[in-house]
Length: 121
Image 1 (tube, rainbow, N blue to C red):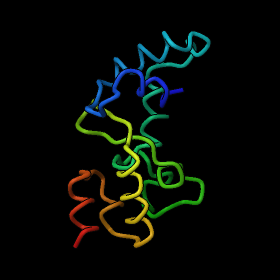
Image 2 (image 1 turned 45 degrees about the vertical axis):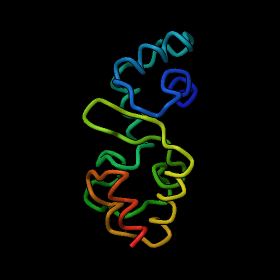
Image 3 (image 1 turned 135 degrees about the vertical axis):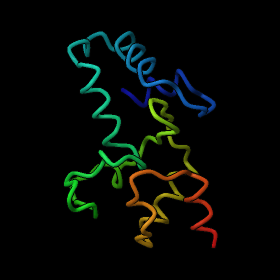
């Protein structure tokens, strides 16, 4: 549902404020109105490829078989409070980095540009 919300709000993948995503999510899916802002934020962060909160175990930042951020990468944090959907080519790029187990994907934050540069070198 969050993916659907972002597709409607941000068809050009420029990025949207988290508060606006949440507000539109609740408008589009009123049956989800019991979902708090903090819960929504946590769900989004868990599927985000470049946020520390994506790690199930903060002390062991390697992949956990249950982690969604690498099995089903959906979102990218542009800057604090601004998120976007990953484009198909960005998902492919990320999966290449996963296959190579590149250290970059375990950093607290990184950019798509950094990911692209490290894959292309």
